[in-house]
Length: 419
Image 1: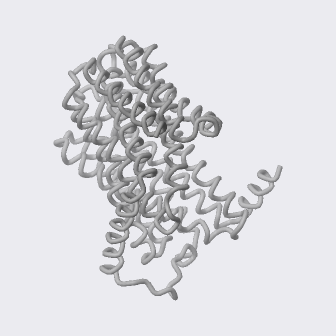
Image 2: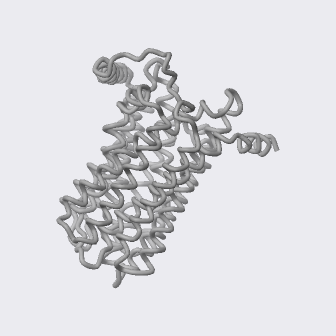
Image 3: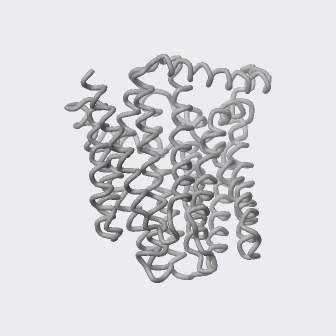
């Protein structure tokens, strides 16, 4: 009842509703755009999708988040955040239209990738601006806690709904990728127009607070990341956790590319059937992520974070070959659930270790490095998988290599635990 009452109070705040609506339109458009990018690269009838193309798409979707992340705050503390939401979404709307035109014109792939890269790069500024602006539209204390719980969750649901809508439209017709991107452009435009409901100065930053020069601020960010890296290197416990998470994320990324190729070529005779299988696989893996959120607190309380991470890695070492070497959809769906659970369980445990073993003064910088490792590991896995996978995605060698990495992680954690 307390949560419901707090939610009602928040929704009475006009500026909070405007900011929340801008987030929902923006992240809904992200879901549409990313699903359109994935289906165009993998499931377009005129394209023969390859692991290399999938790796390129993943790099476009993930690397801007990591490489730009540490520097977005520097600029967001100098620009009016309302204007970032307005012009950022207007720019993404125009870029999404340009990307649709490029698809319709059948231009070389590299032009399409450049346009998509700019869309996802701008996204980092918009998401950071939405989060930084939240304290300006609610009171502090419990209202802010409630707002921090509601807004990101609602945004994630909007992104999922946008991706589902894009998949559904794509299943209805083979040549609708450009149309789906135009839908994303419309949603970005709605987000920009929603931002206009708020005064330009409402979301900050306060012009009375002097900021350092841009060059000094950027150099300070670089020095801060270097300090965070040195702080991390001197502490074996969080360093070990981040190493484990990087390897587990690498394994999950390599298997993800393999499943994408299997859905495209080995498990279905048509693009629409392959797309439907991919949607089911993603949903099952997401269920594993949800199960990890429920199970991990209980498991960590009984096994310690590293003990639970060792169990997750050991399960991956056993289940990846036991279920994956059949190269059949049903066993692979079981593996998708189990490995989704293990990957997310490892991430939750890593978050706990880093939060509890890194000094508060360095925690933000360490998490910025964590974000880079998390996404770069996934993109690196896609690149390695691109070198190893055959055209149909069936690679026993890749599964065995992934199982070996899981086993090495599990053995190393057990050995450290005995020490």
